[in-house]
Length: 354
Ligand code: ATP
Image (spheres, rainbow, N blue to C red):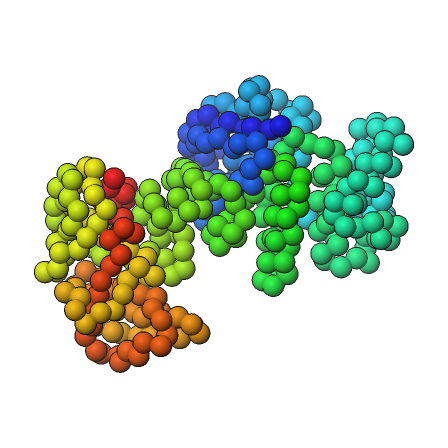
């Protein structure tokens, strides 16, 4: 069992704040993603959970017990460093035994544990081979095995697949996720790759500039982005923002944009000033009857779909449509938007209107 509660943690390095009052909860057994661009504070957050860095303020709880200031050795959390950090001259069994020997575990128990872990990872047949000669995939499995043998309460992983080429990376990502589903151990995983986070995570924290922008399931984050940063960072191509200066009344179900009345989810709060109409490329349809007009600038063929770039009175927009639909560069088309999937934003704060 391992539930991890992060309560307003902050990390300052001198004048610089790397993590600013972050709060979120990682439930027992979750595969939890810390996602964000380079330098946003993901690794620092992970290191604070593992105890490799102490928070300047705030608290961390593991199963209800406060661990904020405890050394790593008293936290029972395994930090999976670079996957390739193994002893190349030793065989697999020795590499796996090492953490247990240094803990003073009895021999018979070590043997049983290694057999169990080798079964989980499917590496029984390579136990006596030296690590130096193994394939990349097998090395990754052994590196994971070294973290698993200690039976920690939770695993911390910092871009474990970062050094791999795309194809192999995808394969290992699937394997990691399948392994997690078998073991159900709480895992916190750092990545800057939004696709990886969406595919693997039960929950995602999106960070930017030392701040948690949003925390939720992949679907919540995709469908209901809390900020323009999240909307832009998640999805490819990312969400379009049609910029307008206007008024949205409380309870409104439409907004006026460039002479067209466009449907939006019912607004709980009103707003005015610099606003943005957020729509994902797959929620745009080209229709002759659409009152919102746009000019086709370019088309990119992707097999079953194509990405059309359009010029509108409110800025450039990308639409993902069926590739069977022919479009001519320079042609004027009408657009309709899936009203249920629209998010309105206040441009000044970057926050979504609710
Ligand atoms: P990356 O993917 O590039 O590792 P990240 O989101 O994991 O990015 P962190 O490694 O947490 O980011 O770093 C956040 C910021 O804190 C960076 O600007 C980094 O330079 C700074 N930082 C991290 N560790 C220290 C340190 N020990 N001393 C000073 N600054 C640090």
